[in-house]
Amino acid sequence: MTAAVRIVQATKRFGATLALDRIEFDIAQGEFFGLLGPNGAGKTTLISALAGLVKIDSGRLEVMGCDVRSDYRAARRQLGVVPQELVFDPFFTVRETLRMQAGYFGIGRSAARDSWIDEILEHLDLTPKAEANMRTLSGGMKRRVLVAQALVHRPPVIVLDEPTAGVDVELRQTLWQFIHRLNREGHTIVLTTHYLEEAESMCDRIAMLKAGCMVALDTTRNLLDRSARRTLRLRTFADLSEMPGGGQPQGDGWWIFSFEQFAEIEPLLACIRAAGGEIAELEINQPDLEQVFIRIMREQEQVDG
Amino acid sequence: MVSSGFSTLFYKEVLRFWKVSAQTIAAPVLTAMLYLLIFSQVLEDHVKVHGLPYTVFLIPGLVMMSVLQNAFANASSSLIQSRVTGNLVFVLLAPISHREFFAAYVLASVVRGLVVGMGVLLFTAGFASPSFAEPGWILAFAVIGAALMGSLGVIAGIWADKFDQLAAFQNFLIMPLTFLSGVFYSIASLPPFWQQVSRWNPVFYMIDGFRFGFFGLADHSPWLSFTVAAGCLIIMMAVTLSLLKRGYKLRT
Ligand SMILES: Nc1ncnc2c1ncn2[C@@H]1O[C@H](COP(=O)(O)OP(=O)(O)O)[C@@H](O)[C@H]1O
Ligand SMILES: [Mg+2]
Image 1 (cartoon, chains in turn brown, green):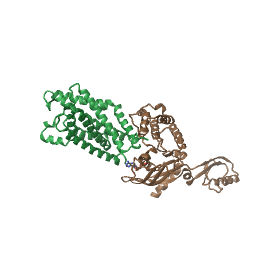
Image 2 (cartoon, helix red, strand yellow):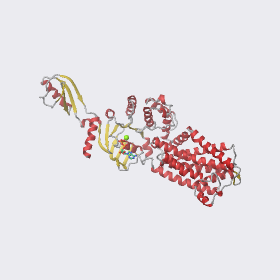
Image 3 (cartoon, helix red, strand yellow):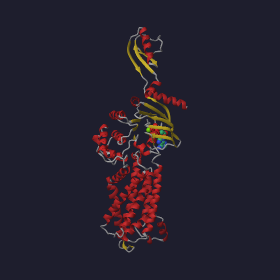
Image 4 (cartoon, chains in turn yellow, purple):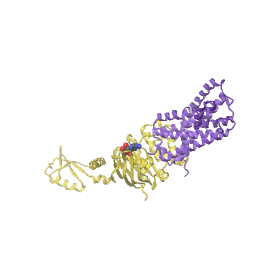
């Protein structure tokens, strides 16, 4: 099957800044893909290059098999981009904005267009604001319109560049519900975000960029597993200091054990029972994407240094 | 699927100035009226040009000046606004070719120029009415001139990163070109040096040709003026299209 997005050795310089350094990966159709990295990593540059806003110096980019330079019309029809900046045209209402955007993509006046616009407005809770001028909308509302604009031409691939930055919890919920639905219906979703818990809970696969280089590319599951530093925290009034397994006392009966595989837990608990301990409380801490991210970025610094 | 990217962009550009017509149509018409009032008041009894009363002579020049300045203003101010606020991205994300982009902005500029021109003509009719000797030439020069200035407006709107850079472009290029083009006088009345200078100003030919359409007489033959104006338009279009094709300042 054609990749939804194909990035081959993409390189881009802005003067002395190497914004993209031979980036290469594919995103499969139907994937929910996360593009993570600190500020200035090159995420927006990569998205802009896919959208034809930035011209890469070398390499190749395709959207649904269409080259973004030589076959730009087809490539752009396949792609819906929600820009990072909160931009809008102050001359128009929400509905006018969406109709205009549909028109730019060659979708003229029709019942199908209008009902799709109504549907998008409904799903993004924008219906009450449909006839309001863009100028009068709050930041969160403007962000919703940006999402709506990216969807008017029903693109199979949807790219969201930090869509939840500075957005209230309610909108995040609404937005993710809608995006999930689109993903279930077969749309490919590419997402950048600063909220790593969002990426962790939603993305099937993640690429991490740093200073223009790709430093990780794997399924979210593998990223979490690979860097496993799981901990078991438990509370017991038995003395575990003589026990094998290297438990660290935390005071007030709390002990912390590190482990890698869940299979290590049962022997540990058996030891505690053998020592006559009774477990009062217990919790397992999984590594989260935040920790993984920080670790990968640190490792990279050491490599660079 | 028929591509309506062009037609939508054109429609949007027309709607944009139409929605703020007090500023984009009424204001320039008023400015032209003020020129007419002042100049005709001062000069009417003293000056005749080509044997015409001064006010009658002045009207076509004022109309054309308004057409040109507003065509320039339309493309340039729309583009710089869209670039500064960032909403040009919506057009750039769309499957719109550089030719469609060019055509939409220039045609909308032509529409704005012609609307303002007709407004000036309509309101000045109360003062004096010039004849319409050869309407074909009137239309031809108005359209060519507006397209040329619209095209120049596209370049200015893309080149300028700030509003004051655009203002400089307007003050140091567009204003001198339009004012020193025989709007207010026949170049026959200028000293030889300034006559020579005027011959290098393409706007002079547009105004001269436009005026010929009204009176059937002018400083030059309309065919010469037409050749110069059309030649300049072709060059300007070629330059603008090549900048747009390269994505100059639009696609980094
Ligand atoms: N138009 C531009 N001109 C010059 N430098 C740029 C431009 N766009 C991005 N950069 C630089 O490229 C690098 C990557 O930026 P960007 O892609 O915006 O990062 P991110 O979206 O990951 O925060 C940064 O160092 C940024 O300063
Ligand atoms: Mg960014």
